[in-house]
Length: 229
Image 1 (cartoon, rainbow, N blue to C red):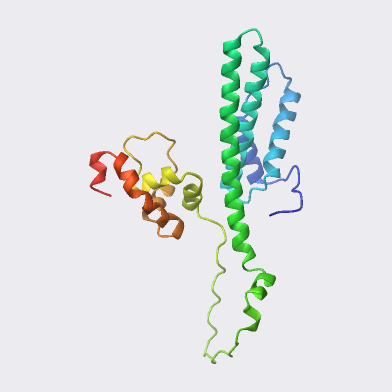
Image 2 (image 1 turned 90 degrees about the horizontal axis):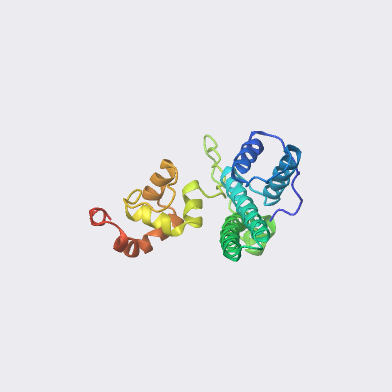
């Protein structure tokens, strides 16, 4: 994992896009001045940067993690202000607990994605290759060729958007793959159309594992879709 702390205020369009997305998710601070609100937003963005997102998908996931934690804090503050209303206090505490659980679950998903990438990258490290006996394998000189073959592009360590979606939302991805598209009775926010298409037609190991859930998904899909599965 990344050991050096990232800059607290990096420049670039990616940072600005993630910051704008985060500000749209944060709860307002009642009675706060514009300066205090701006300071709160910058502190929240520093938390997003500290999660070390490596691409736009991880940046949006990190922003949701921080925003859900902020909403949990807001609900706790509301509970403390409702000391004379036990029912309102219990409602606010329940909301805070729910948002905290969702934030923790999203954080675990982000860590799984980052750990998988780090594992894939570590396999190409010289020390790991040496431990695997790479340097002691027999080497043979290549036969001369009229023209050198073009170098193959390095293997991509990052997951595709569809694979990331399948890691974070395996049940939703399995339903989409089993139904060959979005389920007729949609009870969750739909992903982008290109992610849906990749989930349906993809053949990577992560996406093929979704086929193991087909029988469970088919039992809950409408009859009009079961015939297509």
